[in-house]
Length: 454
Image (cartoon, rainbow, N blue to C red; front, side, top):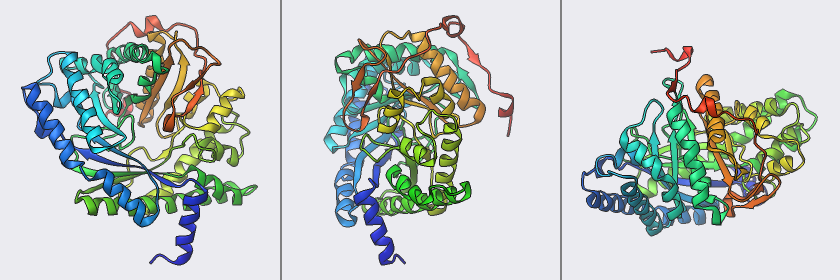
């Protein structure tokens, strides 16, 4: 039973501490849309998405009104389009038409983003997958709500360095094609290693081939709630600190579980997962960086930051997993730069560098996220950064990702404004020494020795 104290406590978290449901994401399988005729494929994709998701936005609003819980985004993820369009798309331009179909469907049903313009190439690329990847710059330039992702490695298969090299070029080309908007196309493009099969988070979301025909996933976020709770643990030992984070994560996840069950019931769609990830927003007080400061570091980037982030990530997962039988996705803590005012402050203070962020990704939920870099950064340097992050994921058997934005026409110290949930941030310096010869080798970095398990 829920008592009046718990009701009041939840109300306080919503009204004063920025607690919200970050997203309801409807996953939709498009495998039954496959056709060798491109026009028929387009029609089937549009019809299935608009039919399955026709009530998604209205159901989200109804739950908001009924329970008083803000639901910030309503989103869709679909089967990786490289698999769906492989038979019909004979050129990058053909895949571009599917991107526009996804965008049209997303606008029709009123969702914020649609993810799944994706290719899974951790061991090798089919011609269809390469065609989709090469279409990404134009697709992100000509659509508003489509998000793209490419998985270039895994612990089981190693790292596909041909794909890594290509993605460096694709990210730079995407930046150039959207240079009139501060290269914002790159904000909707993620490069993964060990991409999860049940990820409801944009921009890397896609509906896994092992999933049901459609599912409801809910992503909850509450950095402000955790930060406020930690005020009571100032000066306390680490055991008390951990217990405070764990209990708070439990409460936040229960809110997500409630919303997920209600959305599943109202839409008559199976419930997938609750993704409890402390994902910041540009709003003041809604910052993972501020949690790290409350734990005891002056700014993220100071000595002790990686240990503090590891502690936070682990306790969030421990608390969340006790609150729901279906916790999944990338649960833990995200450390995007442009979406977190505390991270922006740390960069501007000189405390946080790209290298320190890379170290922090060893223990956080994903990786190098929403980082603006100089527009004259070379494709090979971007590929080198992707390879480094993929290696961390591969060796540590965790998901890592890169979402870099080379902002054409801007350099270190300039500020870039993406707007809305994507925020703003300073352009960060990148190591100027070359990795061209390394990237040009091609082929595949083999899987690590501990990958050989049945």
